[in-house]
Image (tube, rainbow, N blue to C red; front, side):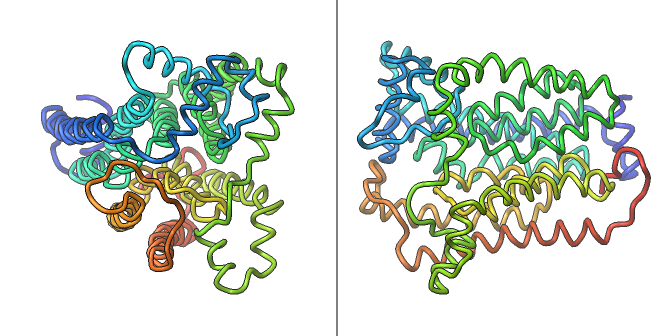
Amino acid sequence: MTTRIRADLARFGTRLGPDQIARRRRLVLLVALVALALKLVMAATTFGTRDFWHWADFVAAVHAHGPVGVYAVHFDRSFYNHPPGIGYLLELVHFGAGHGVSINFSIRALASLADVGSALLVFELVRARRTLDQAAFAGSAVAASPILFIISGFHGNTDPIFVFFVLLGLYLLAERELAALAGISIALALSIKIVPVVVLAVLALAAWRRGPAALARFAVGGAVTMAVIWLPAVIGQPAGLKRNVLEYAGSGPSQWGLSQLGHWFGDPFWSSYLAGSGRFPIVLLCMLAPAGLYWANRLDEAQAVALALLGFLFLTPAFGAQYTAWAVAAAYLLSIRWATVYNLGGGLLLFWVYTRWNGGLPWDFAHTWGLAKPEVVGAFLVWASLGVIVGRTLIGAVRRPVRGAELPSRP
C-alpha cells in the first residue's frame, strides 16, 4: 500500500485502492483530451483575437534579431513585454510556420496542451488534500473550463503555460519532494510571464522546511535555469528588459477590480497610485502575506501558492481578458464551490464579451477591444467572486488553530 493510499485511509476512513484512483485520473484525462480536441478545432478554424497581429510582429522580430535583440526593436502596433523565455518559444513557433503550422494555431495549441497538464496536476494536488471525488471534480472542471476554452482555444496567449509550470513546480516540491526540478519549473514559469514572482517566497519556505539541502537544490535548479534563459538578455539588452518587462504597468485604462472602482468614484487618489508605484507594494503583499500564513502553519503550500495568484489577480491594477486564466486552476485548491462560481461566471462573461468583439456568432476574428458598460458590471461580479475566495481563505487561515511547528496541517 502506497503512502498516498495510507494517507487517504487515515483522513477519510474509506478504502481507496489504486484502481479507484486510476479510474478518476483517467476520467480527468478523458475530459481534458476532449476539451483539447475542441480547442484545437477552434484554433485551426478561426483567426482569434487581434493579439495575433502582435504575435506575428514578435515572431518576425525574434527571427530577424534573435530572442535578445528583440528588446531593441521598435514596434509600430505592438509592445514586446515578454520575459526572455518567450523569445526562444517564438523561434520554435517560427520553425513551425516554416513547415505549414500557422502562428495563430501554434500559440493556441501550446496553451491548450498546458491546460491538459494543469487539469491533471489539480487532480493530484486536490486529492492529496480532499476526497477523491472532489479531486476528480476539480480536475475535470479545470479541464472543461469555459474560461480556458476561450483563452487557450480562441484568444491565444501564454498565460495558461506559466500557470502549468507553477502547478508543476508546486506538485514536484510538495508531493514528490523533487526540489531541483521544482526550481527549474518555477524558473520556466518566470521566463514565460513575470507574474509567478508572487509564489517564490512560499515555495522557498516550503523547500526550507524540507531541509537546507532541499532549499539549496531548489535555489540551484531555479538559478541555473534563470541564468541560461535570462542572462543573455540581462547582459545584451538590460535597458529594454527593464523597461519592457520589469516595469510593465499594463496598457490603457483598466476596467477591472480596484481600478474600475476608482473610475466609478471619479478616479480618486488610489487609481493613479495603483497604476503607478502602487503596483510594487501589491506584488510584495501578494508574495509575503501567503508566505507568512504558510510559515505560521495556517495554510499549506498549495493553499498559499493559490492565494498568491488569486490575490494578485484580485488586486492587480492592470488587466487583460487573458488574465482570467491565472485563477482557474488555483481557485480549486482553495474552494471547489466558489472556484466553480468563478469558472462559470468568468466563462459566461468572456462568451458575452467575445461574441460582441466578433460581431456576433460564429466567432472568427475579435476585432474590437474594451468592455461595454453592462460588461463592466459583469466583470465586477466575476472579480467579486474572486474576492470571496480570497476573503474566505484569509478568514479561515486566521481562525484556524495552529497544529504544529512542522509542515502545516492539511484540511
